[in-house]
Amino acid sequence: MRTAVPRLLRRSVRCSSSLSFLQQPKAAAAPAAPRALQRIQFRSLSSTARLRSSENDPEQQLQQRQWSTPLAKQLAEAISATGPVPLASFMRMCLTSDVGGYYTGAITESEGRDQFGLKGDFVTSPEISQIFGELIGIWFVTEWLAQGRQSKGVELIEVGPGRGTLMDDMLRTIQNFPAMANAIDAIYMVEASPSLRMTQKNLLCGTDAPMTESKVGYHSVCKYGGLPIVWTETIKSIPPSPEKMPFIVAHEFFDALPIHAFQCVDVPPSSSPNNPSPSAAPSTSTSATPSDSTKTTGPTLQWRELLVSPTPPGSTHESLHTPASQSRDTPAPDFQLTLAQAPTRHSLYLPESSARYRSIKKQVGDGALIEICPDAALYATDFASRIGGSPQFPKAKPSGAALILDYGPGDGTVPTNSLRGIRRHRRVSPFAEPGLTDLSADVDFAGIAEAACRASEGIEIHGPVDQGTFLEVMGIRERAQQLIQAASTTTTTTTKEGTTAAEVVEKAWQRLVDKSPNGMGKVYKALAILPENDGRRRPVGFGGDVVA
Image (spheres, helix red, strand yellow):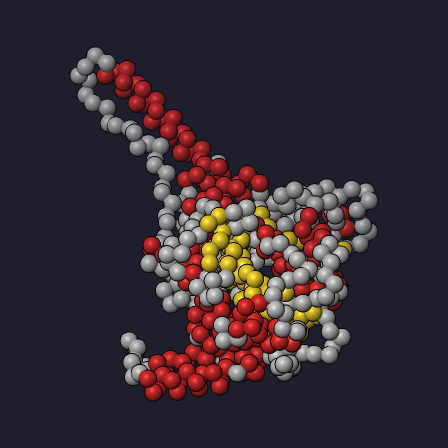
């Protein structure tokens, strides 16, 4: 479902054998031979002893094991020192680690591929058709119109901009509305990957455009109207201002944020600790001793965190029972999920942070599974505060809008078992080849709405609605017909597959609105955060119409 990035596999170098320096002793020739022979025999016996002892030494097994990527080795060493880690920590390292993270070094264009497109791991909507980005640009124009046509102070903000294709199509479209284009003060791109920042700069500013660095981030000048563009590694680096009108877009961004996973378990009364275990390492007994104040007289339900630990040495796809839905054309997974035998600080707090989670614990009970994304709540809080104001950043008149497009349940249910790995457009184990595999999880749209409403009284939520419905209302069919007509009258060029340009346009827009069970028009959703207006107006695409 997501675009992905292919990389050249970087294999861990096998540790050289500790016996590699041994040589067969020569026949007694020189006087020094017997002493040298004694030294060689001593080293040989010592090395043999070390090899035998390593069979029962986890640390030596860790060093001798051949990991699928350098990042896998680093993760294993960290887990060996600290114990199993939360799934969120694993995801964060896999996607953004300085040592071969998926978006920060493991895959480079010099290797002939990147994360996106047919040569990569996944394809996003902006890469499928230019119409997608054009309609997103139109949506923000309609919001600018409906909110009074502010003549200055407009900010365009994109989080997770990918190659910059979406923003490029948006800006090209907004240029057709000079009054709004002239009202834009700056464009902000929230991007952690240095290579993707450069790709975005080359597209939006030109390959020859300089990029300078400041305390805020990286700066250049856009080819559209000479607008300043600022790249930051986090949205917190973008200064909030009550006079600004922020228009924020997050396309396939929330699904890449790290998640925590929890399972509800029935804990016997003799082992019902509420004291979090530092490592919560899986074991045959709880790793935290219950105090007198936490002991209970009957079984209790508790949330336990699912943690990541290395798979046993010599594991195979068969021994790990890799699901049939995941391709086995990869090395066996280096890691696996294990259930913590004691509470962790996350399991004591996160599942109790929302009535939705507490309800699942009460209604489903033992065996219930949930996924929680704290980072999603942080971003939703930031979006809402910029648009509607907050106690920390008051805003006399709420303004702006945020549009979130991603995949996940649209009926308010909490995601479960949704972590997925994507490599070369195929589902693979999310624990195979860390750093070379794209990781994502379903977005909890209801959780985003809850966090946004909690952060600001000056906003309201619309949606989520199916992407297919949203795009059709925005006019994707009509725009496609314009492009098809233009392609039919101006060119007869065909692709390598023998299809015409008009046929490519037709296939692309139909794919974006496909409402079959696994179609993009059904699986992807759109959610909007707007200034609170007492229900007087619904935005375009969510049941409303253009307000001039």
